[in-house]
Image 1 (cartoon, rainbow, N blue to C red):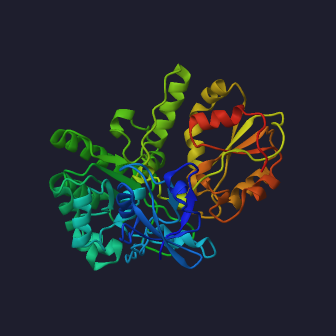
Image 2 (cartoon, rainbow, N blue to C red; image 1 turned 90 degrees about the vertical axis):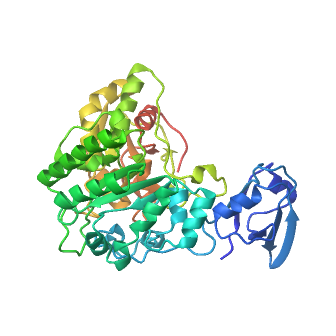
Length: 467
């Protein structure tokens, strides 16, 4: 399917050449690009020839420009031929734990290395080919993000429910052998690939895949819709056991490779009720968006705000930001921020609306945040009734749960602060629109950036735009 032009930047060379929103892109320099990566390489040339279809008529437009000058277009897709869908049937896959009736994009399982490069999505490499390897090496498409889960062939194929899972890590060896930057992930199911299996996986990674840039280890997420009887969430004891294993192999990797390599997710520390590591332990926060080091960066940000030093933030995963034409899809779609109800704050504290994990993170430093905000703050913990299970992160809060929590809240409130990670283009995961949540609230509602600075800015505002 050919992509269409979603936006033409005013004053750009594309606008000067007469390209318009809605034009269907057919070719650049007589080549029909298959994805945004190839498109970007083609339009990087001087004076590219762009063929578009407008109103059923094909048009050829020569765009005068120097080599490397941006064209000024944004397209409606990242992959033009077809997203490589996932043919695994992982028992722990969260998509299988979604109820029916949610928006279609949530049910798409991709296993496409191009989306791994562009957005930081994890791929199992079970659909990777020699041609894919050649392109990645030739075009240096890195970093890539690979789901490992287990290095034991039998365990991995059983987890993926795909016989190719036993052999597809050969592509990981090939990528690393050709100096492609790769970050790995292990979704930890305590009764499947935890314990002794995790020990072997870490040992194999150190010996067989030492060039991996990082390995993030995240716990299994189970919703109330899960149907797999063999899967259970971590107990506190199991979380502590697996953390001990990760810490042991961090030390081994540090001794043998000069870096810790393995990094446990924040959820594991919360489950085990263990303190979070120091910033240097995360070695640059390479998997921040995978929920690894988010709490530490939040605490560090608070400390920097207290001392007045400049805040440093981790680089967002994926290379799509460097490709202007690539749309921000999925959870990266534009979010709403700012005032969403008419009028200034009511008298009362700013209420931080968050999930159970967010409450556990913010509670210990609430007084420090109040001093920074120069205002009373209160936490409104929203249990995730929609997904249930052990789902407790703020990013998976849904509109119905937030609406019900606001409607039931009878304590003093001046403004409600909802983190932007729960919202995509003014819509929550359950397709409830922000207006329905606002209608249930007794005070103005603001969508704020899920950072310390974002919370403080939301607490400090006194009015703004209307919904």
